[in-house]
Image (cartoon, rainbow, N blue to C red):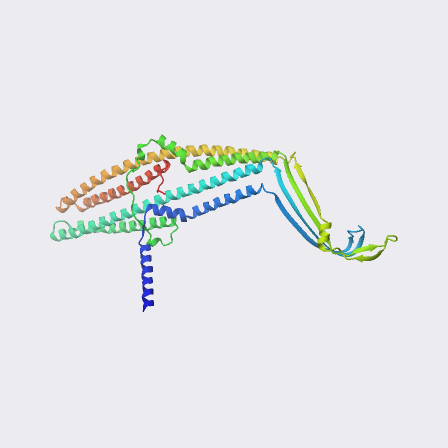
Length: 457
């Protein structure tokens, strides 16, 4: 009984956790943080950072000596030269040889130094690229998040309108039975209810699709149980619109990641020019080599007078031969480039062209940033004006609908005109929602350029 009670308690806890996980509503901050940790594009960019770190290790390795060892064992059968007498004779011999070589660059036109500096810049560029990808994902998530909120509120509007029209249909049925309005008006209201049902279905599908899009950005598989919570406000909390576009642009130039990437790429291009020019300079390398050999063949003994073989002596032990036959060499090698088919010159020219491209890319990024900032500022101003105008229009439409409702109730308005008033009211409600979330997103973009993060760390 105790075991059964224990397992029942565990099962209840698991079910409770599962239900809580499925009913969890995500905030914008939680969505962005989760996307940054799990988005596939960000993970791919993180691998680029790891590749840049590996390239730096390779650049550091260029300063270190190279060490290589070699060994071989061979059988020689037939007519071979006797290594003792130098004479050719038929024999079967075995040889073992071994050696080691050490090389080090003493001077290489500063190419190793410039390669290391370039590798350090590549790491910085990879970090900036990762940050840029995170910023782009954050903006995409914010946009998708606001789209879900808009669709959910629009669904509420459509459902409320359906409920109103269903009540109106029931009221019209009573008026038709009482003879106050013609039966044709009831049919118009019925058609309106059917149209409202279609609008509710379309709005519900829009919510599902927008949630699916957001869940895909977050790399969530269980999107059916995924939902969000509205924590946004249609207010310029940081008073960003009080700034001028020039001030926002100057602020953006200090911190925008795309400019940092372009500047770092320009520095990398400069290092590539220096590396290419290093090929025109002499190179000096130091080297050291060690080798030895061992023979397994018997050493023939010759008669000093006749020169004939009178016997054979067993070869010396392995390590004795290895010690006796060892040899060493060391020195330095100077290489002076004179002519290499224009390859060095062409490499320099190519790197200079790439440098000019990087300069143009930086200028283009500054122009793009300026245009984007001014466009974002204008869009935010326009979105604010559009939202304020839509609120005023909604108030007017609401009053007009209330008046139309009163006239329809006493038979002073036909069903067609009344339905038109309802449609205009619904459209005004949807327009308020659309302009509200459009304004929120435009403000987020403008704050983003000003250096205000979408979420607080």
